[in-house]
Amino acid sequence: MGATKVVMLMAARDSFRNSTATHLRSLQFVSSYHTTRLVPQPPDLIHWVRREGGFVHQDLRISDGDSYGLGLVAAREIPRGSDLIALPNHIPLCLQSLDSEGDGPDAVIVQLARRVPEELWAMRLGLRLLQERAVVGSYWWPYISNLPEAFSVPIFFPGEDIKNLQYAPVVHQVNKRCRFLLDFEKEVRGSLQNIPSKSHPFGGQDVDASSLGWAMSAVSSRAFRLHGLHKGVPMMLPLIDMCNHSFHPNAQIIQAQDTSNSKMLVKVVADKLIEQGEPVMLNYGNLSNDFFLLDYGFVIPSNPHDHVELKYDGVLLDAASMAAGIASPTFSSPTEWQLQILSQLGLHGDGAILKVTLGGPELVEGRLLAALRVLLATEAETVQKHGLDTLKSLSVEAPLGVANEIAAFRTIIALCVIALGHFPTKIMEDESLLRQDVSSLRKLAVQFRIEKKTMIIDVMKELTKRVRLLQSNLKTTA
Ligand SMILES: C[S@@+](CC[C@H](N)C(=O)[O-])C[C@H]1O[C@@H](n2cnc3c(N)ncnc32)[C@H](O)[C@@H]1O
Image 1: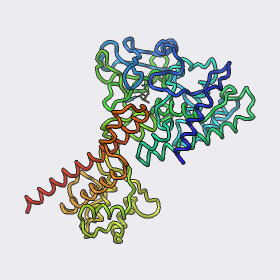
Image 2: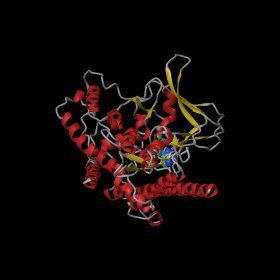
Image 3: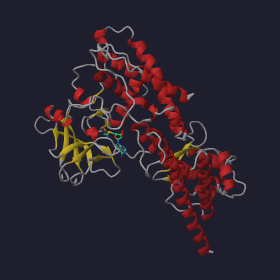
Image 4: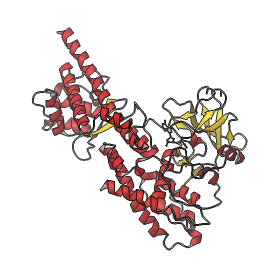
């Protein structure tokens, strides 16, 4: 079902290739990506920002080359603390408040944006971007023409490569986004049917799922939410959005006041000395590979913030526990006092959130760890001596005793084995696929699943190490 929808999205993309009206800019979408921009030779973005009253450090250049697409680099050493870019208020592209009324094209955009669920906020600003892309003479055209013509986010993967992700939570998200785009295409077309041309936000042009997908991906992969003046409102920040991501950035975005006119500026400032030839990197956030893939179209190898989602399920935990050699586990039939703690952990009763995670900086989600410790304990009094925070913490060693801790860790290791078993292929097979001549989208899908599996194996290794340590402590004490 999901895959069929995706194929439809791809097909929709192709069928609109010839719909260009001569007096308007086309919203069509062409299927290539990386460094290819919307027009073959877009205007010089640095020059445009300066001309519009922004500041760009004299030693900054846009560079083309590595696998990250375009990026910003230092042509000469830039000292720490230097301003790299400063954009006055009129350069960022944002959406007006969804509460605003009025008429004309902007009001139509606001009405359409109100129909987009908050979780797909990128589509809201995407409508605004599409509006500026459609009409000739847009103030932002020098910026928009420098945007990539295509994105490697999974809504544009062929159906087969969505399956190739092999990870249900992300496949589910991709299908949801594709379904949304196809439904929203109908809604947008319906709403624009009887709009007089002077109020048409896209200059009379048709909008399809593919152009909506382009706009949503342009925003999700490039917009920033700043928490100062604009209180988390997403904005497209021309030129600043040429900076690529690193968890070890050398620059950051700040908001500051322009001393000459006391208006607000969005700035990029060097956090470190930037060597000649070094790229300027920002941290997009401590995100999992699920987010990086869905919103940005890339994955980070050995991402310390990556995790896998599991459903908290007593029967599954019993199976894992038994596989780990623990006699008669009671995960599926907890006692009354255990159920009370599970409710406090949000793993039982009304409003329970059964999604738990393995991996990331926490290694094991605190709620899962606490549940295992509690359900593998036999005495209510021993457990009730401890607060929930202690039970949830991996750094508090064996709060309910060493044997309990070893049993909890072994159960998680067995859970990891079960989780690995859900992937239809092994890492070795994936790696051999990567060496073959396959499309870059397929490679990305395979790289994503390799990272998930490697992360699970790393959790197992770490917990095995801890079990060994606990066992040796036990022997020493004995
Ligand atoms: C804000 S834009 C940065 C400029 C972009 N490289 C370009 O060519 O316009 C974000 C996009 O850059 C690429 N990118 C940024 N950081 C990356 C990284 N660490 N690894 C791989 N791709 C990255 C991804 O395609 C991402 O969607």
